[in-house]
Length: 87
Image (cartoon, rainbow, N blue to C red):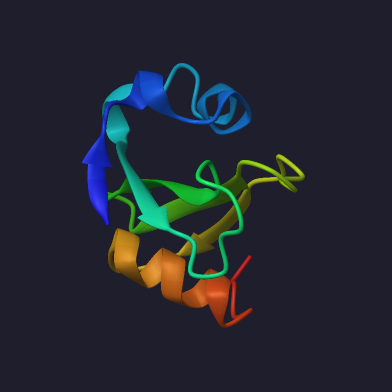
């Protein structure tokens, strides 16, 4: 997982945090089943609130953001991959 600029986020995810950008950090994580180079996950995490959002981006993406309570951006990814999102 690498830290990225908020402005590099998926447009749908960026729109969901509009006005609250200062609360979030942005990350990109590899998608293990990638079939093309642009498939990955974009994650935002607000450490002051222990809250994160994730969206699958690239070919085949629905653009839908999932939100969960989490302890870290890695926790957000793990919950999403395991289908354990706490809404």
